[in-house]
Length: 199
Figure 1 (tube, one colour):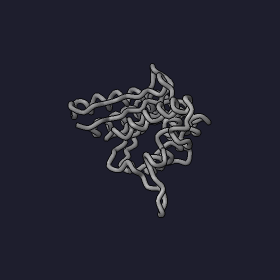
Figure 2 (cartoon, rainbow, N blue to C red; figure 1 turned 90 degrees about the vertical axis):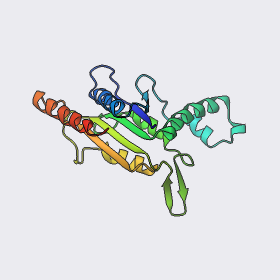
Figure 3 (cartoon, helix red, strand yellow; figure 1 turned 120 degrees about the horizontal axis):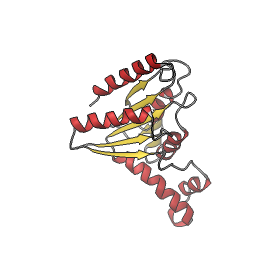
């Protein structure tokens, strides 16, 4: 049995293509792996706090010296990290906002990319600690950006995931969604066809 962690980051609950892709991914995966456990964390429904002085202070303060506020901030952050540590497969649903990922997803990454927990510093440089995990990134884009200099999603997410040891990453892009019906239908159909091959 594997554990699947799905991270939703679209600000929209209705009409979201990235959520539509996620639902298909989950349906396909459950059909192929009915015993697996799937957890969904919705960053729009339950926003993750951006890093602040309280959390940073808690990270750098011995537990016996932490304030109540620092302990509370750490508890929230630790929960996010624990969910990732427990997962065998990570699914990131990321609409493209102004060429990049939603700020809510960046905030989540800021919590889970943690020295001594998901990576460590060594004499030869940083070393990811989450080896053996797989990741899928499902994106929704108004234009066609894959492989271009305007795509700041895939390079950043590949680097961030590799930094913590996740190198088996597959991107599935639904592109051209705001370029008229023909492009939109084609882009969504291509993404769904790739999703059908995943599980």
